[in-house]
Image (tube, rainbow, N blue to C red; front, side, top):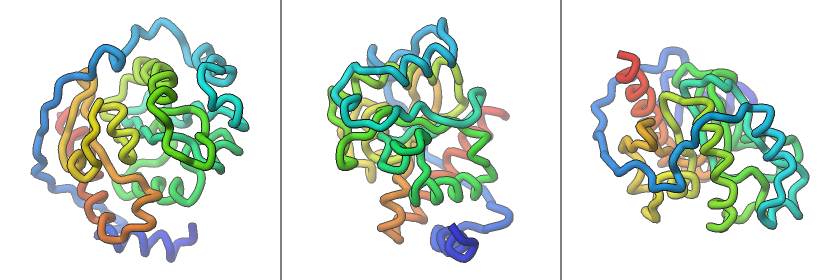
Length: 228
């Protein structure tokens, strides 16, 4: 992404490019911790074992159409964990999450709150690309979610940022639309969760970029409150 395009994205979202200011009075929304299948397992494994299991996984039909699995990338001791729905074509080819145009915007969104991609850990609900970039099916989500929960148990992030409707609904066990889920703070096993629009959607919907900026500020303030 060239600098002019980057500045245009940030200006549209109402972001101070050089010194993002945060002043948020956010609504704290309480939800019950996730039901049993979302419980974080005890961290008895390690990254090498988990990554090897994901790479060779054949638990659902997506293994037949993928090029490779997309395990996730970033800081394995991160305070922030970013969770999307599933890899797309570019991710399937490169084996890395959020590397297309949406990934470039996600990088700029993180920079706007003074975070580099290397500081956070980015993963998806589903580790294999669904054919034609369709939404992952319920059985695919449930089959693959165990890997994500094991990643969460190893990282122990201070905050989870769910990116897009599918990721938010899967982690929060809800069918509410993202427009009703955003703007609040939830919890998953005592970890705060903030919902934000998917960058791919924001590339198509200019008006909602300001809402995404508000959600990023909410997440940033939530972390600051935790750290005291």
